[in-house]
Amino acid sequence: MGKYSGFIRYFFVFCIIALFFTSLAVLADEKQPGTAGLSREEALRLGERIYREGILPSGKPVEAVVKGDITVEGSMFSCQSCHLRAGLGSFEGGIYSPPTNGAYLFKPFQAYSSSNYKNTPFAPHQVIEYNQSLYQKPPNRPIYTDASLAEVLRYGDDPAGRILNDVMPRYQLEDREMKLLITYLKSLSSDFSPGVSDTTIRFATIITEDVSPEEQNAMLVPMEYFFRSKNQTNFYNPRSGIRSTAFRSRQMAEVTLTSLGVAIRNLSLSRWVLKGTPETWRSQLQEYYRREPVFALLGGITNGEWQPVHKFCEENQIPCLFPITEFPVISRTDWYTLYLSKGYYQEGEGAARFLNDKAELMEKPIVQIVRDSREGRALARGFQETWRDFGQKVPVTVILKEGEALTAEFLQQALAREKPAAIILWDGPESLKAVEMLAAWKNRPPMVLVSSSLLGKGMLSMNEQVRDFTYMTYPYGMSQLPGEQISPTMGIKKFNTEANTMATIRISQKTYGLTVVLDMAIERMKGNFYRDNFLDVIDCLMDLDVPLYERLSFGPGQRYASKGCYIVQLSKEGKPDLIKKSNWVVH
Image 1 (cartoon, rainbow, N blue to C red):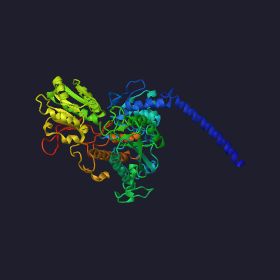
Image 2 (cartoon, one colour):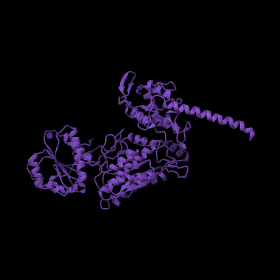
Image 3 (cartoon, rainbow, N blue to C red):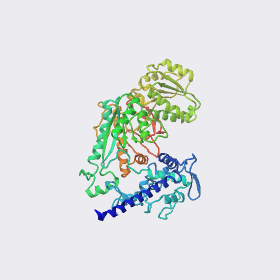
């Protein structure tokens, strides 16, 4: 023991000295301009605002220069605009914007595989050539330091001496502001999001107890089929030995799937059932999430409003993809929930856009008759807000109380009083009887608009006498009429109108659209399992043609994938076919 005592003493002294200088370094860093006097949370918040919005702590926009001498505001050219919210970069218009998150900035640049999720360089003959053919990778560079990162942000020259493309803004940041931005970049997408382990990516779907078993199954069957097929047949998993028939050899599977970053991660799906009134959902969601943090929520279904779940996701930064609800939250700023459409609101919006293009209706009153229900209020709000944005006069709105019948006398009084150019009727199929009475009136308005969603199957039984002046908002594609068969690739048997309702068919079709988007998003994350990156890659998907919808289109910050509706009429004779009376009315 004695021959080691001197070494132990020297080692102990060395550790004390190292700890002392490390402490000095930490204290010095805390006193650097930009973070002095600020908590870490506040410094990150201010740095995040610079990155995402181009706004300085003072509230003024960042100043920047592009194309050599063009001065612009950073709010127009924020870092997020090109490098995206998660900082994983983008490729658009022939310009490659590399990752700017801490995991990439502060190590030498090189293309990596994600085998076992360790930073292992690709062999030259592997998938790197394929990736480079898709994206213009910049040359290798040494590791960034705080000083060299500040240099490239201000002047555009990187640690390798390369001058960046002049579309990259040169940000005019003071030392304090630069320190805040760099502090944020070091934290940006530095650790995988909750719900991701070495073997599994966990998801959950939400079901409220007011949803019937048939409607629940219409969502769950195709979703669970997707998860089974993904875990059992789509990938070669080195741990389980499962081989996909899509690959000719194990080597091909390993090379391809390693590049996607999902080769050894299974997907799991839990059901979170919410009971009771919406006021109690928050505590239930918190308990589910405490027991099992998930990467994202998928689908979900309720007959009521999605607002409590939406708010929970915003507060906890949990992505929620395509919940099945006709009452989404309408917001221009919220980020974490991506809806298939705006639901009933969208039909009201489409009606306003359609009428706004009718020159013969200008300066003439519009009467809106609204059933005092969630559906009626959502339709009316969509119409009124869009109509107002066009600068039109406020429509005359008449409210039908719950249980109050729409009678011919009621309509006659409204017509005599207002002499409207059009009547908008946001009510259910029982209102069609009153509309039929309009057919014989000489002074009836030339146009009546109704909601196909609110009418449901009742729209197909509309009397032939009113079909020539009754128009319907129809928020789906025209390739399939309600009740048509759907593809068995959803993992379910073909539907028929006798065994399944229009509602269950549409639920399954919406879920199928979700699985298509989810499949593409998992692939394009390439092993970068950050929640913001999940939404970033979805935002950058190309438009999709899927059953039910005309198309699903995506774009940075867009939270509603189907963005319009048709205005249709029923054919006047014979089988009630839908006839387009407008192009796809886009909001």
